[in-house]
Length: 317
Image 1 (cartoon, rainbow, N blue to C red):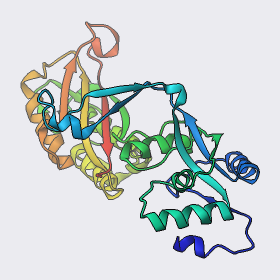
Image 2 (spheres, rainbow, N blue to C red):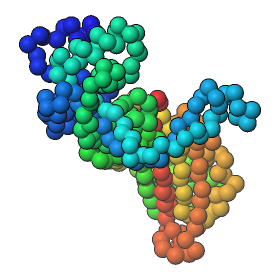
Image 3 (cartoon, rainbow, N blue to C red):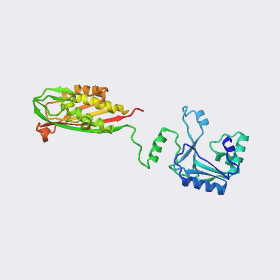
Image 4 (cartoon, helix red, strand yellow):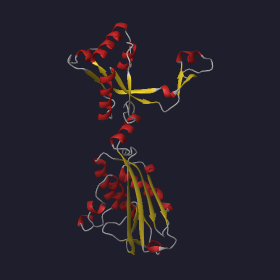
């Protein structure tokens, strides 16, 4: 009633709309206003698409068969008689004034102004509402609202963002074989400007990609003397600091090494622990696996080592 008193007396029509319904179209508002101008009162509403059941909570609570909080169907209501009310709701000024006065006088608590108009014995006209004219009240409504706001495109996944990385290096005599920050006994090692750790290089590109940043070559140029012989595990840690500064946390990292020999199974736990340490997470968030190509290709011939990695990041909250 207080809000009604603020309406200019010269106003012929009053339109009421829920702020929690941000998707009402201009057409719906115009149609509701036009209907109220003709009929005195009009509300947007949509037909029920579901079968409607009525229950009586009071009688359900006293029913010996019904545990507390459970209800039984008392009646099935024909759904062709059911409409679900929305806003906007529009009223001729005098119609709304009369309804509000009756409601205040009789102490009626109504969920919308149209109910007071009904109580006053006046007709309320239904205007076809819109399925997209949802009311935002729950987290599920927020998700649907983001989809509607995106023009039907789903909102960005709340689980996070994924990135992939791939690296390969030639194997040559006289170089240490370092994988996942662990030095592994071998008669050949990977050739590269740094220590050529394919696991750390692939992992670095995966987390940079997930965060939408430039690749490892941009961050640590291969021709820069500062990175000659550098520990790739250390470079992974530096890259991670930049990613973490952007508000990201690691959900998990999965790396698959492609190498014919030596066997990596005895070293997997050590590699996981080293990579997890560089990323500041528990080892359970890191997986390092290995496979061969059955002597096919450059890895199968023992000419090189390669690694694929996938990282999933998310922002807390």
